[in-house]
Length: 341
Ligand SMILES: NC(=O)c1ccc[n+]([C@@H]2O[C@H](COP(=O)([O-])OP(=O)(O)OC[C@H]3O[C@@H](n4cnc5c(N)ncnc54)[C@H](OP(=O)(O)O)[C@@H]3O)[C@@H](O)[C@H]2O)c1
Image (cartoon, rainbow, N blue to C red; front, side, top):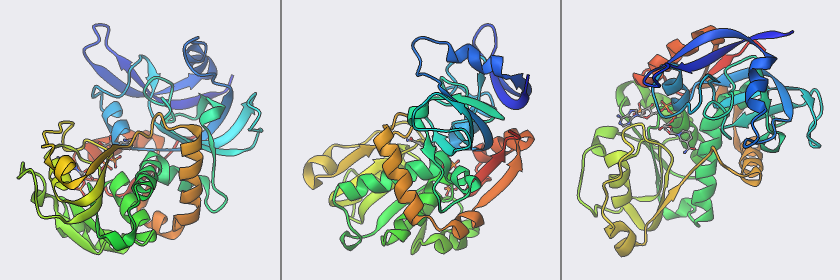
């Protein structure tokens, strides 16, 4: 039987602690979850060539709570690879596919492994304009950034309405949001805690202005000077509250993450006095239609040369070391994992 490497998260017997270890598995391990009656049909076997390290993966790989909800579970919320076998009508052996969220690495065995058994309904074809490695470099970060851009556009915001703020801008989601917004013609202000080292990087991605995240990170007044037509926020907490307080009349903030805090201690005044909208972005449970729309737009808009410039590629054995650097704020852009599949 074919064996493959995988990062497996196991909870201690008393449920108090989790640890992740690089193990060697066989398909039987994956089948054990696939047999669950209440889960999706895992009708497609993928040889996983690439995964990535998102914020959630960093939490899982370092044993932090809140992501992995079953034990033992293969970590990894993204995968990209080749269909080995399938009973799903849309897919054939040899198809290049990618998958983000949809329970991977949370309730279903994930992508930090050489193999995965997945739900064909949630798979997306790797765009013709990019390699599987590019699709992995985008991963959940790029998919979510695009969902946020589409949400802002659906709200009716256009480049003529004013600048768009991106918080957590040097991170995976943030840096891709900067690039995608700039590509769509928006004037982008990037907020980062690393102005000294990352301003050039962010300007190269298309930001016109870079601000220190300290400007937004402490609790402020409920209504502030109207600055942004829209916001894509990766950090939550006081940063998101201040960003909403600075929205122009009728503006929208797309709440994507909680790198600063999961709290939202805000006033209703921006909503009832300025018609502001706070929109939640959930990539995990995105429908098939949303997945196809976002990836079609990624296919159209992503500059693969720029993507290469913000991507590091490391072997699967290095995933935990990357995870530790993500949590200490030492990673910029995206890290692709070669999974050995
Ligand atoms: N809603 C969804 O479906 C979805 C999908 C993907 C990700 N997310 C969430 O989005 C967030 C970002 O994910 P990611 O994968 O892009 O992570 P990441 O690469 O680690 O980026 C996070 C960025 O947030 C900023 N940051 C970190 N700690 C901060 C703090 N204490 N205060 C203010 N800013 C801080 C840093 O940017 P600077 O160094 O530039 O300041 C960091 O690079 C995470 O919370 C993740 O769970 C949600």
